Image: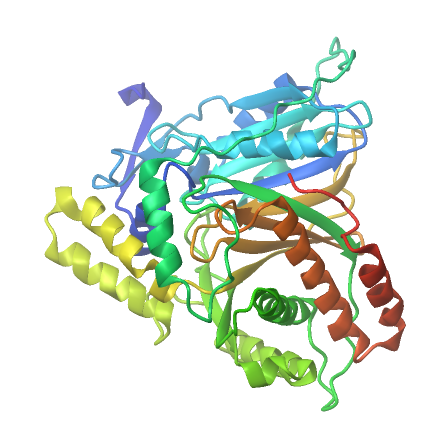
Length: 466
């Protein structure tokens, strides 16, 4: 229980984007962001807890909680942070580490008890995995990476700490439970989302939960377009999303219309870490563009250049004529016209009803560069890789998360179990990788080797679905 001695008196109302985000939170798919990194050594979970508590004291986002579950009373901030909750498990494989992260995500996070962050240490004989999960109301992916970076810098294992030993135990596989209400909602969403702008679903209607397909590939090198411009790696990934979605639907007899890929754009500048400070933009393509990948990549570059030219983004969703702006303005009207105690319920119903209209085909979310020299403590275990993830929801059901580190692109295909089963998720990941190689090979012939390797392999370099 938070006492008056724990509070510094800081209270602020939720912003409109925060209210929309809170109303999107569901027990079966909580709105969270997550990181999972692999190290080359072992981590003391108790020392990580102490380091996290020190770091959490420096940020309002990790000392804040909702005064009530509906968010009517807004945020309250504590003067002192609570100890960071750390889950400690032993794993026998990378698959088990991803399963442990999923088990940390799915119960959700109590918004009434700070910190809205959970940590994971998964011990493995060849090197521990380090994970973090945060509610998106408190932090976005870049903010969570900032926290993790600061925690590793503060980490100091005790002198008498012994590295874990013994045989690792395998964690049980997650088995989703399909309830009556989610199943009914899933069947309704399938009817509404059966149009040509969504991915054709193959998972069971109403299936709760999510899973991951991680892949690691060399950073692509887009060469100049025929007009002399050079696309970014992110442009190439967005274009690959369009091509992969179109080809996925084609394989299942669905003719795709206008497809939309959602990308994150910079939010408001804050002196504190924030969760709902990131805006979004949509990059669309029609069948004619996708039939000519050269034109598609050029069109994506046109769109992203225009987005960047706008300069610093306004508060997410509050400006602009796009679908996101319309959705948030509609939410504002509903909030204004509804009594305070009924606002959360009304907004939740409105979001469920509007989801098939405003959702994109898929999202490509780029965390950016992760420093390659990170260690857990001074001269401690090195972080060898880092994957970023967040929870998708239907009818979109898929987010391709990107982190770049040490000359490689770390992709995480995070999908709703209602959209894909394990084999389908691996198939889509392979379509995406093949599209990446194809887009690169059109302007950089040396990438033909990678294209042939993807076609011959049939699966990505990190096999399996977790």
